[in-house]
Image: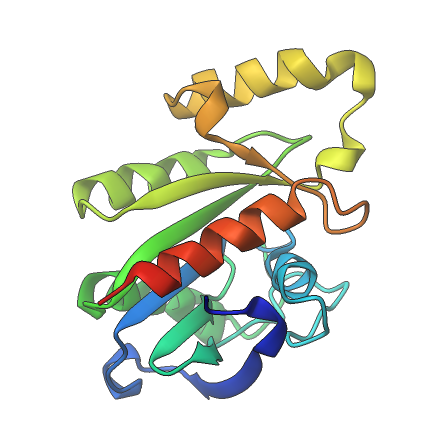
Length: 195
Protein backbone atom coordinates (compact mmCIF):
# COMPACT_ATOMS: atom_id res chain seq x y z
CA UNK A 1 0.00 0.00 0.00
CA UNK A 2 1.16 3.57 -0.72
CA UNK A 3 2.18 4.72 2.74
CA UNK A 4 1.55 8.36 3.59
CA UNK A 5 4.23 8.07 6.27
CA UNK A 6 6.85 7.93 3.48
CA UNK A 7 5.79 11.19 1.82
CA UNK A 8 8.41 13.75 0.79
CA UNK A 9 8.28 17.10 -0.98
CA UNK A 10 8.92 16.75 -4.72
CA UNK A 11 8.47 20.14 -6.40
CA UNK A 12 6.60 23.43 -6.70
CA UNK A 13 5.28 24.72 -9.98
CA UNK A 14 3.16 27.66 -11.11
CA UNK A 15 2.38 26.16 -14.52
CA UNK A 16 0.44 22.85 -14.38
CA UNK A 17 1.64 22.00 -17.89
CA UNK A 18 5.21 21.76 -16.55
CA UNK A 19 4.46 19.26 -13.79
CA UNK A 20 5.30 16.21 -15.86
CA UNK A 21 3.49 12.87 -15.96
CA UNK A 22 2.06 11.03 -12.97
CA UNK A 23 -0.14 7.95 -12.84
CA UNK A 24 -2.14 8.86 -9.74
CA UNK A 25 -2.73 12.15 -7.96
CA UNK A 26 -4.89 13.28 -5.06
CA UNK A 27 -5.42 17.03 -5.07
CA UNK A 28 -6.33 19.17 -2.05
CA UNK A 29 -8.35 22.27 -2.85
CA UNK A 30 -10.08 24.81 -0.61
CA UNK A 31 -10.25 28.42 0.37
CA UNK A 32 -7.35 30.19 2.01
CA UNK A 33 -7.11 29.43 5.72
CA UNK A 34 -9.20 26.23 5.54
CA UNK A 35 -6.22 24.20 6.77
CA UNK A 36 -4.96 22.37 3.66
CA UNK A 37 -1.32 22.29 4.71
CA UNK A 38 -2.21 21.29 8.28
CA UNK A 39 -4.37 18.46 6.95
CA UNK A 40 -1.58 17.22 4.69
CA UNK A 41 0.81 17.16 7.63
CA UNK A 42 -1.70 15.33 9.81
CA UNK A 43 -2.36 12.72 7.11
CA UNK A 44 1.37 12.15 6.61
CA UNK A 45 2.25 12.19 10.31
CA UNK A 46 5.04 14.71 9.71
CA UNK A 47 5.54 18.29 8.63
CA UNK A 48 5.85 17.86 4.88
CA UNK A 49 3.93 21.06 4.07
CA UNK A 50 4.66 24.53 5.39
CA UNK A 51 1.92 25.88 7.66
CA UNK A 52 1.37 29.62 8.14
CA UNK A 53 -1.02 31.79 10.09
CA UNK A 54 -1.24 34.10 7.07
CA UNK A 55 -3.96 33.08 4.59
CA UNK A 56 -2.69 32.40 1.10
CA UNK A 57 0.86 31.26 1.83
CA UNK A 58 0.53 28.38 -0.64
CA UNK A 59 1.16 30.27 -3.88
CA UNK A 60 2.18 27.49 -6.21
CA UNK A 61 1.16 23.90 -6.90
CA UNK A 62 3.11 21.91 -4.32
CA UNK A 63 3.68 18.25 -5.12
CA UNK A 64 4.50 15.55 -2.58
CA UNK A 65 5.74 12.12 -3.61
CA UNK A 66 4.04 9.14 -1.97
CA UNK A 67 5.48 6.40 -4.17
CA UNK A 68 6.41 5.74 -7.80
CA UNK A 69 4.23 8.13 -9.81
CA UNK A 70 1.93 8.65 -6.81
CA UNK A 71 1.40 12.27 -5.70
CA UNK A 72 -0.42 14.36 -3.14
CA UNK A 73 -0.96 17.85 -4.58
CA UNK A 74 -1.51 20.97 -2.46
CA UNK A 75 -3.19 23.65 -4.58
CA UNK A 76 -3.19 27.38 -3.75
CA UNK A 77 -6.10 28.52 -1.62
CA UNK A 78 -8.89 30.54 -3.18
CA UNK A 79 -10.79 33.45 -1.68
CA UNK A 80 -9.29 35.79 0.89
CA UNK A 81 -5.52 35.75 0.82
CA UNK A 82 -2.69 38.20 1.33
CA UNK A 83 -0.26 38.76 -1.50
CA UNK A 84 0.39 40.85 -4.61
CA UNK A 85 -2.91 41.41 -6.44
CA UNK A 86 -1.54 40.07 -9.74
CA UNK A 87 -0.30 36.93 -8.01
CA UNK A 88 -3.53 36.31 -6.09
CA UNK A 89 -5.55 36.84 -9.28
CA UNK A 90 -3.49 34.13 -10.98
CA UNK A 91 -4.30 31.41 -8.44
CA UNK A 92 -7.81 30.82 -9.80
CA UNK A 93 -6.60 30.14 -13.35
CA UNK A 94 -3.74 28.02 -11.96
CA UNK A 95 -6.19 25.81 -10.03
CA UNK A 96 -8.57 25.61 -13.03
CA UNK A 97 -5.73 24.67 -15.37
CA UNK A 98 -4.41 21.99 -13.02
CA UNK A 99 -7.83 20.37 -12.61
CA UNK A 100 -8.54 20.59 -16.34
CA UNK A 101 -5.18 19.33 -17.59
CA UNK A 102 -4.10 16.58 -15.22
CA UNK A 103 -5.12 13.12 -16.43
CA UNK A 104 -3.83 11.32 -13.35
CA UNK A 105 -6.28 12.87 -10.88
CA UNK A 106 -7.89 10.03 -8.95
CA UNK A 107 -9.57 12.17 -6.28
CA UNK A 108 -10.00 15.80 -5.30
CA UNK A 109 -10.40 16.43 -1.60
CA UNK A 110 -12.51 19.60 -1.54
CA UNK A 111 -12.01 21.19 1.87
CA UNK A 112 -14.59 23.29 3.69
CA UNK A 113 -14.44 24.79 7.16
CA UNK A 114 -16.59 22.60 9.42
CA UNK A 115 -17.65 25.49 11.65
CA UNK A 116 -18.15 28.14 8.95
CA UNK A 117 -19.74 25.79 6.44
CA UNK A 118 -19.42 26.08 2.67
CA UNK A 119 -18.88 29.59 1.32
CA UNK A 120 -20.13 30.73 -2.11
CA UNK A 121 -16.62 30.02 -3.45
CA UNK A 122 -16.74 26.48 -2.01
CA UNK A 123 -20.09 25.89 -3.68
CA UNK A 124 -18.71 27.22 -6.97
CA UNK A 125 -15.73 24.85 -6.69
CA UNK A 126 -18.00 21.83 -6.12
CA UNK A 127 -20.12 22.84 -9.13
CA UNK A 128 -16.92 23.11 -11.20
CA UNK A 129 -15.75 19.66 -10.08
CA UNK A 130 -19.12 18.22 -11.06
CA UNK A 131 -19.01 20.02 -14.41
CA UNK A 132 -15.55 18.58 -15.09
CA UNK A 133 -16.78 15.15 -13.96
CA UNK A 134 -13.89 14.86 -11.53
CA UNK A 135 -14.05 12.45 -8.59
CA UNK A 136 -14.26 14.47 -5.39
CA UNK A 137 -14.86 14.09 -1.69
CA UNK A 138 -15.90 16.83 0.71
CA UNK A 139 -13.62 17.09 3.72
CA UNK A 140 -14.84 19.27 6.60
CA UNK A 141 -11.74 20.54 8.39
CA UNK A 142 -11.38 21.97 11.91
CA UNK A 143 -14.26 19.80 13.13
CA UNK A 144 -13.01 20.23 16.71
CA UNK A 145 -14.18 23.86 16.53
CA UNK A 146 -17.83 22.84 16.16
CA UNK A 147 -19.61 22.79 19.54
CA UNK A 148 -20.64 19.24 20.52
CA UNK A 149 -24.23 20.40 20.97
CA UNK A 150 -24.26 21.65 17.35
CA UNK A 151 -22.26 18.85 15.74
CA UNK A 152 -25.02 16.65 14.30
CA UNK A 153 -27.07 19.64 13.12
CA UNK A 154 -23.95 21.16 11.53
CA UNK A 155 -23.25 17.92 9.68
CA UNK A 156 -26.76 18.00 8.25
CA UNK A 157 -26.57 21.72 7.39
CA UNK A 158 -23.23 21.43 5.60
CA UNK A 159 -24.40 18.40 3.60
CA UNK A 160 -27.64 20.15 2.66
CA UNK A 161 -25.80 23.28 1.49
CA UNK A 162 -23.48 21.18 -0.67
CA UNK A 163 -26.21 18.88 -1.96
CA UNK A 164 -24.51 15.68 -0.83
CA UNK A 165 -25.53 12.92 1.62
CA UNK A 166 -24.17 13.66 5.15
CA UNK A 167 -22.38 10.29 5.32
CA UNK A 168 -20.23 11.15 2.28
CA UNK A 169 -18.49 14.05 4.07
CA UNK A 170 -15.32 13.31 5.97
CA UNK A 171 -15.18 15.32 9.22
CA UNK A 172 -11.60 15.78 10.38
CA UNK A 173 -9.46 17.77 12.77
CA UNK A 174 -5.73 18.18 12.28
CA UNK A 175 -5.51 19.37 15.88
CA UNK A 176 -7.39 16.57 17.65
CA UNK A 177 -6.71 13.86 15.08
CA UNK A 178 -10.40 13.11 14.60
CA UNK A 179 -11.05 11.39 11.27
CA UNK A 180 -7.41 11.62 10.18
CA UNK A 181 -6.59 7.91 10.25
CA UNK A 182 -9.64 6.99 8.18
CA UNK A 183 -8.97 9.68 5.58
CA UNK A 184 -5.28 8.70 5.36
CA UNK A 185 -6.35 5.10 4.77
CA UNK A 186 -8.75 6.20 2.06
CA UNK A 187 -6.06 8.27 0.34
CA UNK A 188 -3.57 5.38 0.48
CA UNK A 189 -6.11 2.99 -1.00
CA UNK A 190 -6.97 5.37 -3.84
CA UNK A 191 -3.32 5.76 -4.82
CA UNK A 192 -2.63 2.05 -4.46
CA UNK A 193 -5.54 1.02 -6.70
CA UNK A 194 -4.44 3.26 -9.56
CA UNK A 195 -3.05 1.33 -12.55
